[in-house]
Amino acid sequence: MNVKNSLSESEVLKAIFERRSIRSFTNSPVSKELVMKILEAGSWAPSGLNNQPWRFAIVWDSELKEKLSKLTRYSRIIEEAAVAVAVFLDHDASYDYIKDCQAIGACLQNMLLAIHDLGLGGVWIGEILKNKDKVRALLGLDDKLELMAVLAVGYPSRRDQKSARKSLDELIVFEQ
Amino acid sequence: MNVKNSLSESEVLKAIFERRSIRSFTNSPVSKELVMKILEAGSWAPSGLNNQPWRFAIVWDSELKEKLSKLTRYSRIIEEAAVAVAVFLDHDASYDYIKDCQAIGACLQNMLLAIHDLGLGGVWIGEILKNKDKVRALLGLDDKLELMAVLAVGYPSRRDQKSARKSLDELIVFEQ
Image 1 (cartoon, chains in turn green, blue):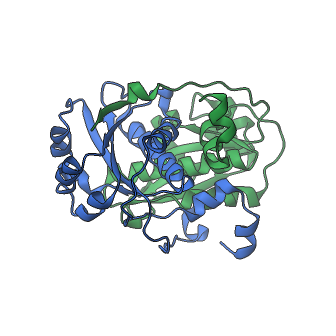
Image 2 (cartoon, helix red, strand yellow):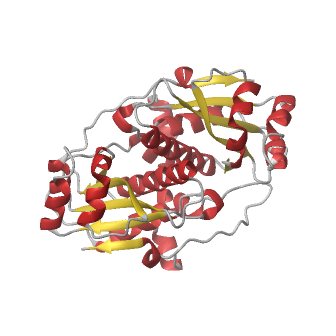
């Protein structure tokens, strides 16, 4: 993205281009109101047949957050985060597993963009899926719920994260 | 979403809440520059290990678009669209199929938000996956590429689409 583009871009495109994974947080608490706004943003993702297969588990409690953190190698991130949001697929609402996983990806992206937009930071932790059944058990949830990801959310302690993407030339495989 | 909230919300949250699936288009062409911006937005989605498994095929040509349209029951939408963008998973870039499908969902959502933000309309067509191998063959693509969705994109002929979502009460399965 060159400077000219970044200056002429809308707030929406800027959020898409400037959002970064935030893995280090201050100890400021995050209000419930902001977390509800983040979940609401997630809920407005598209899904096949509008089946809305996503479900949310919110972990504020320090002790519980510490137990959750032990189920991923990224323990420090979850411990530092003011709140962790685990996102589940509800198999009772599912109609096509792959499309449901894609829809939950769209839901997670809405949440990450909302987090960025609200002045917070967050990171999508997928590595914890290796312990998805343990996460479900820790939260005492029904086995119709399958863990899809955990978002760690808090106020960023720094915002200088760099990232990079392939050029469009590498990504476009066909044009006619 | 109540009126007070909608008035106080940022452009980013407004785009997330106000984006709708657009299934009917005018015959105005869409510039290549806008399509590149949409793909660039998609490319800035997060992915596990930043593996960026998404690949894009752009179909402008009317005859080819008509052939593509015959592979879904939503033929009219693709025929009317100024351009169709097929999004593929590159199995050579894959590291975890489910996480890759989620990442491509995030990529598609970035694209849909960019489409909305740029004054265009679009819809995520998943039903065409029943013919994913025929789509790949039509475009002459390598079988390491697996179709994940097709986006139909154009200038909306109307913007009065209604949609609804479950309340957060129905989506939050745990809080502590």
